[in-house]
Length: 338
Image 1 (cartoon, rainbow, N blue to C red):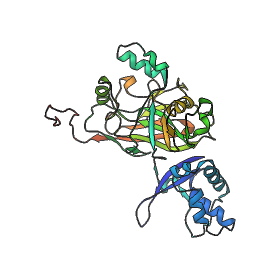
Image 2: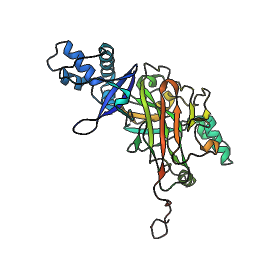
Image 3: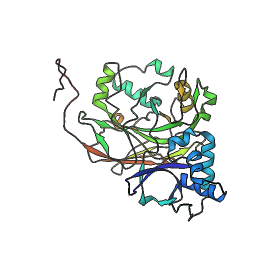
Image 4: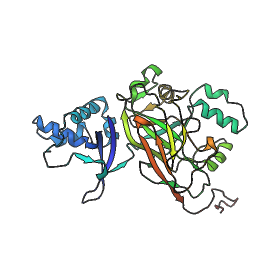
């Protein structure tokens, strides 16, 4: 299934719902389940649907394989023009709703998994490739409070002169586990999303020179979408060929290159002496030239970035304008300097 979080207008304000793509329409999965249960003569179909097929992707993931199977059965059984018990609407056209980020992850571990991108960074710094990079997959922890979705404007932080994107794929945990083996890891992955790891490169550089971070260089925005592809629809977990377009112009393509560290290894490593939970996300890092930094080519306010991952979706966002122009630099008195 391709699952989405969509927003509809109601008299009480906008409401987010969990949907699935079916041809040119979006099906409300919670209401599809209510319809299926009503046909089974279940006493309170809405209550059963709220329990087994809740209206958010995170809650569905927390319900495990049984909840995902119930959602799939409800989607397959729903007729083109269903009549629901309370007259609700279960099927929407894409132009009638607003897509949001499919998931606001519980946690985000963003890896540095593509060897060619890592080598390019070492070359820019005039350093040899770190031998430790080959010992284990490394990552930083991202900020899950600043999540954006398809069509949202990417904020341009006031403190950066070099805003960048990174084209990544995120794997999402669907089954809890601790000390997961590489062989068992694929069974813990529920699905995949396109991810844009937005980066303030000048701030990130300062943080990394100090052997800390990234923090403020990344924490202002991460974008996910346009949908969540369940693992049964993408069983091998490979990253498809990726294409970056800015204002319609192709900036790069991956030509199908795969990361040195696979998602199974990333998940196994992250789970050592830690419990992974449904809704935790693992970013792949970007391929070489999947960001402006690798090309010394920089986006500008108003640019439109499109990250096209083929069957995993194309994530499209405009870039906002800087709000002010103050730097993250402080004097000895602790005051921020302009």
